Length: 80
Image 1 (cartoon, rainbow, N blue to C red):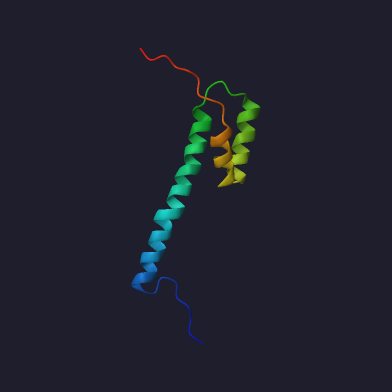
Image 2 (cartoon, rainbow, N blue to C red; image 1 turned 180 degrees about the vertical axis):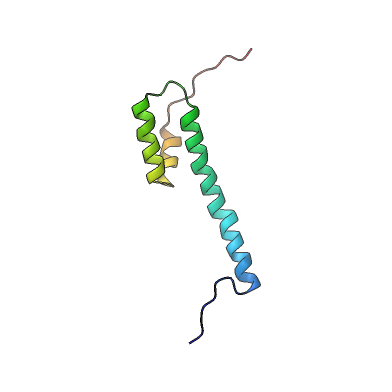
C-alpha cells in the first residue's frame, strides 16, 4: 500500500493555493465584512444586534448572506 502524502508534488501545492485564494479567503472576507457592518451600524437595538451576531457566527456562509440581504437600510448622512 502506498502512503498518501498531502502536498507531495508541485501541482498539489498549486491546487491547494488556488483553493485557499479563490474560495477560503473571499468567504472569510465576506464573513468579516458582515460582522464589521453589524457593529458599525447605528440605531439597531441591542437584542437585535446580538441575535444577528449569533446568526452570523453559527451559520458562517448563510448567516452573512442573509444579513446583507435583509439588513436595514443605512441612515441618510448629510456630508458637509
